[in-house]
Image (cartoon, rainbow, N blue to C red; front, side, top):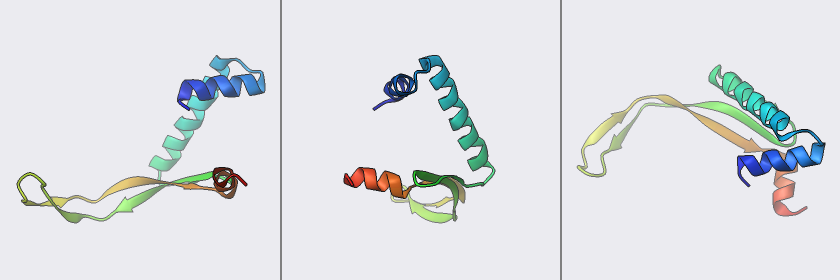
Length: 92
């Protein structure tokens, strides 16, 4: 399911317009982005948790030349499924 299909399905289920649902979805993703960029965890109990993780600096290797390179420290994002989402995935 892509974004437009998700918006259409949510609009049909709630009786709201697709424009309204799309606006809400945009706002949710903006809030996720803002909170994660601050290093704060966003949790929707039972469904998912999104948090920023730190990556340490490390040594890597250029696959074309075999040369050793330094990869700087950085950040990544971790998304964890909650119990309701895990149960839905297993069909329970």
